[in-house]
Length: 301
Image 1 (cartoon, rainbow, N blue to C red):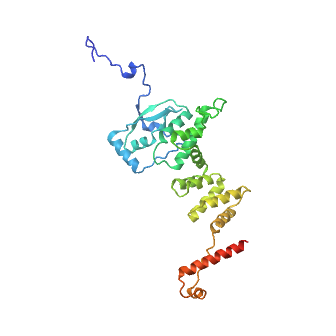
Image 2 (image 1 turned 180 degrees about the vertical axis):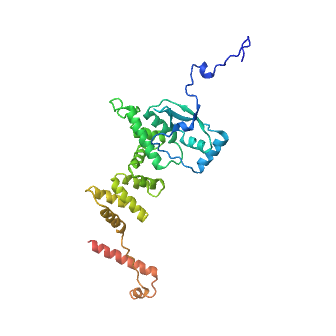
Image 3 (image 1 turned 120 degrees about the vertical axis):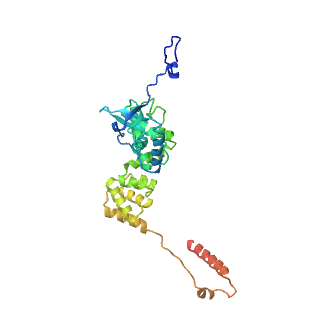
């Protein structure tokens, strides 16, 4: 627009008219200067969904800016957008739109988890480490409990309750996912691949790491582990440490302790000598049941 003298003038944006300054405009950042978030719990997979994202980036570019923060080396640390950046690299891009924000370590963890936790089809291991990282960060950020804020998160909810409320899970479920972080990686992979039941894995998480390694070997050899086997093992461990041979003995006893089959049949020749010729099989069955009932009553007296 020009004024009456013909000079160009800059139109104020709506934000400027309202007194709001946009301090977080996206800028193009060289991908080579961005490194992943330390201990990022979410896996970036080259699956079919990634290929779809790559095709979208090739056609439309990266529509949602990454969230970055500066590190001590004057480079950038990825907070959220790992999948988009990977797709951009596969699409041949060298820069990517991003917002750079000043974030403490704990604030960065919370932002990273919040940006990813609502994704569909998260693996149990991803939820486990994400919930744990966020819980630890929330507790550090809130500081020590006080009389006014005994639950640390400012809402009079425990941290696990607050996280559960945010992600739509119970506090108990959040706790159980966090327990999975106590598993050895090999067992956690079995949980992700649905070869180890979630509830059994939670029970195993309370067992020493060395014994967990024996359990993993047992699963590899047999292809299964049953809840009653882990329950029996934990009961035994309450009495003191055991070796691998003793563990195998406990597992084998659980599997072999099946009820002995007691099928019983009577030949027609054996039965007919006790019944008239006109008795049908149903008639004989009723008589036998009534006699057994009478016998059982006599035994209990």
